[in-house]
Figure 1: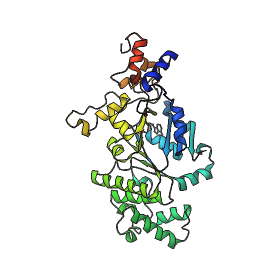
Figure 2: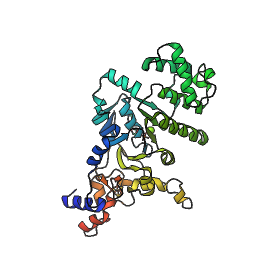
Figure 3: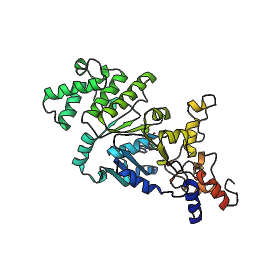
Figure 4: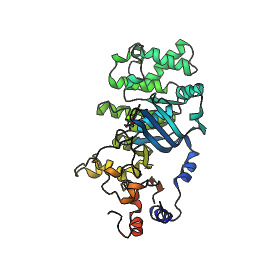
Length: 364
Ligand SMILES: Nc1ncnc2c1ncn2[C@@H]1O[C@H](COP(=O)(O)OP(=O)(O)O)[C@@H](O)[C@H]1O
Ligand code: SF4
Ligand SMILES: [Mg+2]
């Protein structure tokens, strides 16, 4: 960006007293239990290096729910797996920091990382069978997690705690359920058991990766309600990964919108739903039913999702953006503070200043 455009960008987008995102990140870091800073993750494939996470930064505030939303393939799960360090063998974090209570977990040794995964941060997946072992009873698996990572060392104490946990997540008849195998339970029950497993070690952070996508709508609502209740009761922070804006609206305190392995917009749920400032977020909102567009035709985002093997030089969304300008082709938009205090990375926010600089030829 030329320094002239940069100044105009700041003046136009944020008004007087605008702050660069880094300042805000530092300010929010004080309340953050987890700070992800400029994270880069790639996969080595036969076709070359696939750049899946390309400079993601966010703060997870203590006791809050952060939603991570974006279309399939935008790098949401890989961001989550990078935090847990459970990437596929061909994947690796190539840059950035993941600060847990100020410590960079990317520098942890295996023992420290095992303890982070077992005791500080848990993950639940769309498919409970990813976490549950089909060959052991529910009780055996819960006792194992408790005896390994918590103070419930005897079989009797662990068993009593396992029953307590199942009750807490709304599993009926927990005394008999603990003797059952996962395949004997319904999808919704299995999801509850997986949540109980994740909570066994009383983590500070719960990462939920599309936790309700595979469930029918009624069970989905019950599980989300349960997660919200547990979050309030236990005070943990949650990263809720989903492609579903409806889930975000009902659950999240803060939201990041991802596209092409980058954060394109961040703010409160209200910022994202009522005052979107990125063309991709606006496209997502136009593609789902909501109170505001009930009578309008839903418009899916056109074009094909990005090829991570060959990222565009400029804005990742450019090939699909109806409002793209020349500058979008060649320069990545910086993330700047909007007048209401949320952040977006889109040249549209400085369109007027840009057009002025280029004598009204911006859209040409
Ligand atoms: N092991 C892997 N090898 C190569 N590419 C991968 C691997 N895992 C994920 N990817 C690619 O990373 C991109 C983002 O994946 P993901 O984070 O799962 O997206 P989502 O936002 O749907 O959760 C996808 O294009 C996917 O093909
Ligand atoms: S930066 Fe340009 S291409 Fe990207 S979303 Fe904004 S207007 Fe569209
Ligand atoms: Mg995913």
